[in-house]
Amino acid sequence: MSVRRSLAWTYLAQVFGFVVTFGSTVMIARIVSPRDFGVFAMATAVATIINVFMQFGLAKYVMREKEMTQDVLRSVFTVNVMMTAVYVIAILIGSVAAGRLFQSPEVGRFLLVFAIFPLFAMMEFVPEALCTREMRFGAIASLSVVRAIVLAVSTLAFAYNGYAYMSFAWAQVLAWAVTSVSFNILVWRPDVWRLQFKGVKSILHFGAQMIGISGVGQLSTRAGEMALGSMLGLTPLGLYTRAAGLPSSLYSTVYAAGSNVIFSRLSRELRETGALHVTYLRFMRMILGLLWPMLLGLAVVAQPVIHILYGAKWHAAATPLSLLAIAWAVTLGIGMTSELFVLRHQTARQVKFESIKAAAGFVMFAAGALISLPAAAAAKLAEAVLAFLLYRKPMASLIGGPAGDLRGVYIEGLWLSLAATLPSLALMSWSGWSALTPLPMLIASIGLGGVLWAGLLWQRQHPIALEVARLLQRTRRA
Image 1 (cartoon, helix red, strand yellow):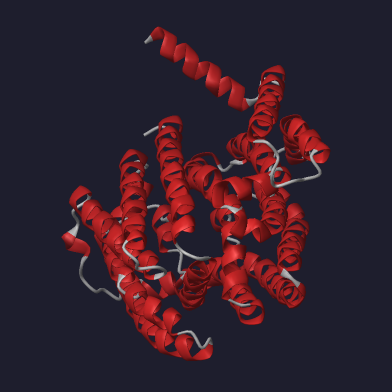
Image 2: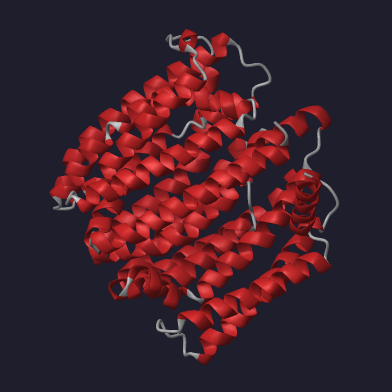
């Protein structure tokens, strides 16, 4: 499948999934309490901290290898089974410890059910990884839509029937069960369901480095959330996770899905030509041109957005939302860091950067949590700035190509963001940043910003404008 088709399938699925997930989250937030979200966030933090030591990046290993033989797949499957078994046992132990540690038996009950879903994920891993390697993103996208629908509908059904925070746990198990069966029907490979320890050592070595890259950052984030919940309580933690959920949903919908497709493309280009800067820069132009205006615009209109979506009981999440949206925008400036370091075989080098960022980020976040919820969110922004400063120069050498090209992408993204957010900025300033800013005026300001943004895209012949024009031409011909 071509890159354009892969991206089209992936983004269609992500947009649909975002609408379904976001819509269900808004409805669930009106059924359950902020404390229920706090219990969910605390339990997820505990599970993620355990999972940090299981982040072996096996899917990236499957994609990176030049040849994918039956023996390699069996070895990867073996490592996956081992890690899953350890993960499930650790969650069960954590369910007992967490309930006592936080004086909240709800967290322990949540984890008991949550321990079921990794068993389904274990059986889904090989077929999904093979689909990604072969760029069968149509199938992956379709099943991601199925997962989003099952997760949203089942969570709503459980919540409506009074399951409260347990709704999230049971819905997760059900969604992964459905997609695990579906992936195995799509890619039936029972021949690799055999434990084989040949080659496991190299996989474990790769996995240990991936723990240092992705795991350390997650450990810092989740440990910070646990500290926030312990210091300020489960209700403020619920408010924080709702604030964090909006920009992270935008990030995963637009960036994370596209980066998965582009990673496959970059891997192939590097193997065939030894260069990747052209594709990388084009991807970054499109991502920053689209996501920076959205994230910075969200930061501007956070007050009325929280009020409209969740109601008055969630107003305290507005300021953290503004700060976290800006933090995600800064993080996007160093997009695809782990992918670049993996492709260039410099994962050990990235571990050092991630360790510095994670340690400093946790200290700043914990200090912020001692003060207030907005201070904790401001600490995440400071962590994002630190990461940008750490990675900016090393990434320039990994990308290759003419010096200054990436700086030009940043400048272009900032101009597009200014055009898109200027009307909303003027409106919010005029209304005193009120959560009760009239909805028609809010829609009008966002619409005007969209017109200015689109005009600037066209004037610069931006890749987004060119892709839209290309799509329109094909539609007219059809």
